[in-house]
Length: 248
Image (cartoon, rainbow, N blue to C red):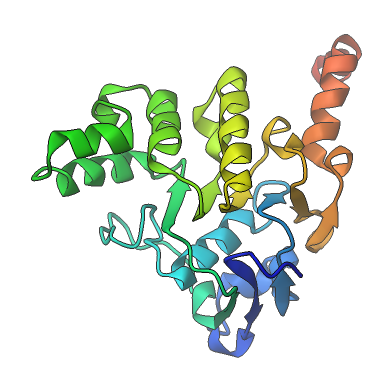
């Protein structure tokens, strides 16, 4: 285990989770008692519904971040839908303290952008411009504002959790994001990222944890379903489409 990570891992006390909670029925999660992180960038990969975002959200909540996204200073709530998994989570923190924290989720980013403007309303505009790319996040496209936040708000020695960041980005912008995240990791940041993107998952030196097959286990890039399905489609597109679309 690395000694320079902000979060080395966690343990789960299932006795603190309600007995009738759906969490006990999530195959990849229900047997988890602990998890260790070994690298500055860790990806949660797997099919929809396997528990990736649920676990990421629990870590964010246990860390003290707003479940809908943002930093520890964000305390808004548009709808209380986060799970109770964080209640049984005990974080194992490293000796270093991050200089910044942020939970960035694609599905609630609009709400975060709105709160950014409300929180910054009384500030010097130059502060807003410097941290969020020079103009209102609502005056940019979803992808532009998402990337502007990462490029301008994130910095080295930060602890960042990202939930499906590729949802807002074109393939080209995903490559830009990969470059940003790789640079920030080399500058001392740590990332936990739930993703389906075969581009982001290809980041060098990252650890990938698969939530498929009803368990959480480390896999190589080439073993992820995101890579395998994309590779199959690109190399055998006509044959695959013929098989999938020929219903007669």
